[in-house]
Length: 608
Ligand code: G6P
Image (cartoon, rainbow, N blue to C red; front, side, top):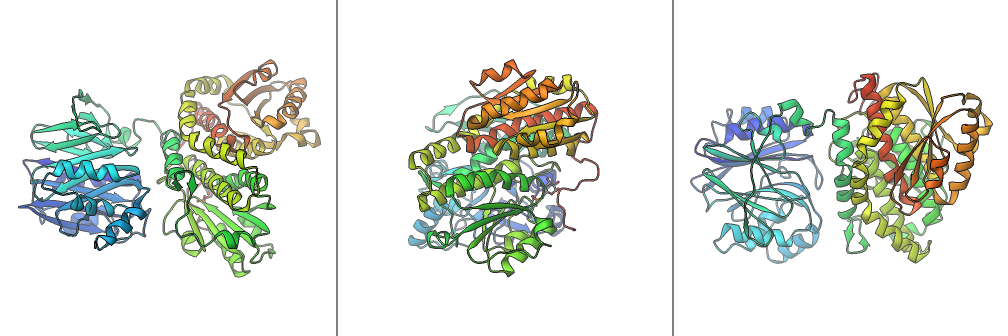
């Protein structure tokens, strides 16, 4: 995820900028840059290598003097990692320089408007519309130009902006992307998180969504979205650098669990034009979609589990037969596929060796390959006919959470988009599902409030030798992911079982005190699942159930119930998985496991 720093003070800026960017390296990046202003001129340095390279290039900042500047680590979204796409971006007249974290969702329309005005673009980024808009609205008042520009932006953004006419003023804006302000006697700072600030100041001013901050060396003024000045007390932080990297959480995994609402919001909203779902530049169009007779979803690990959910959603909404395959199996099966099969490849890293090999097999046989990938410019993204990115930002914990959740979001978007074109589902239901999809981030936020209940539950359950997850249909697909999360990080044997299959084997393993986690969020199959719960209860199981709010009857059978808000059952996976991510986290925590780096596992499996 991109990182931002900014400085205005009575001493040179570059030292802080380079040091701050180095502190933000942990967020993941593929290029970086700084702009320092002196005598009304910007000096810009960029790299597609490490921050070390920027330090070397500038002789540790010595070649870019000036007491005001901005810096950025870029994690590519729109446009490949390159010098041209690296920030800061400047207006054509070189009066404004901008660093940005987030996604400008209406950038295509803005870009067209600016091109029609005669603007030339130097990069492929969504960000570059911002300096050009600033120049468009410039009438000599820096603040006004920013306010007018921000009014035009849809999406998420944290911005650091310089104007060559305002030699000591740095303006910062924020909406749905992180940004904080640091205060000190002779300088004021902006940064994406406290990591970049802790060695310079402990005094922090939090800027809220929609607010604009004007920083000079002597002070900071805050304005609300109506341009009224507001006052806010500063906070003092006592985190060290390590705690700051994790945003105050003890582990990246918990940080990333908490980042899910925003990651999902970003993934969904960046494809919406009102109620329309728009996939820019997608070759799979209505005509091609109508020729598709089968969908093959291929992936590994959690991405495969997201694909399992996708199968149920696609078959229900598109009425197109959908297979889900493990990439390591598919690639060696001499698979049968052709131009009437849509192959959907899912991969967080975009580098998983088996998944890439499976993609090549499908493509060689003429199938249209659409990939759902988190890393821009990754091998899988490059090899695909179409790519839909999940805007999760870099995931650091080995056990994926926000990667999985954003994969689900893209699958939902694709299913609704396709069903609208094919008229393959009831129109009213589709619109209701669309409404629920838009509510998911908010409902995820609500669910995250239940962390304490789940922590206590995990503590009570201790360290069982083995446990089972059961569910039917999508609940089964989520069981697979919940079970994997638990075993990955806590090293407890766990198995996910389709509840209807219990009696064909697993039930022989149910004995007194065996923990069974029963996922019962599928309303249509609730009674069936309830019967399975009774079966395991009768054999002594300790049942922890997950059900939708209102289904209190399950509390009569289960020892513990975790409730999730009611949404269309096709979307329930996105909510249902959250309590189990938290459960796995706390079970592992109480066992003293290395949560972010579990033994024997790698984040990106680039070998077979
Ligand atoms: C590894 C990771 C998993 C991930 C799987 C597939 O096993 O630990 O979290 O689900 O690879 O990775 P991909 O990057 O292709 O989604």
